[in-house]
Amino acid sequence: MPLITPAAAALCGTLGVGLVGVGAGAAFAVQAKSKADDADALCPLATCTNDAAIRMSHDAKVAGDRATVALALGVAGVAGAAVLWFTVKRSPTSPSAEVALVGGTLRLRGTW
Figure 1 (cartoon, one colour):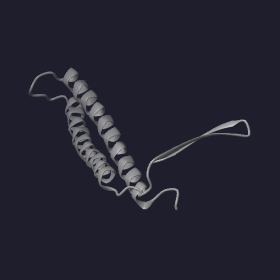
Figure 2 (figure 1 turned 180 degrees about the vertical axis):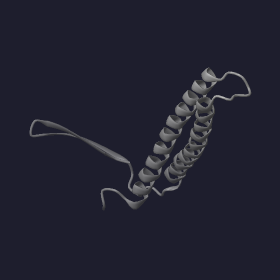
Figure 3 (figure 1 turned 135 degrees about the horizontal axis):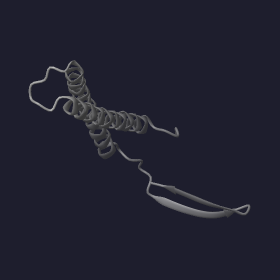
């Protein structure tokens, strides 16, 4: 029996992609908020003629769009991993546990 089954590999890969997406989305969201705050500090009024503030505001919108996409992909990845976790067929063996003292070493082993 292989150490990692194809189903386990798919689950781990999907979960990994999901977690990376959520992390990237959070990073982009923080960046967007920071840039928006910087733009508001330079030009607090609704209409602005400050080129730097306009650029920062645009950069904040782009970072916000990236955060939305990354978070959506991340949530989809985590949801896909959850679907795999709950739908993968388990091994037909019954659960067992073993505790042994071998050569002065305590060995714990279990199967689920």
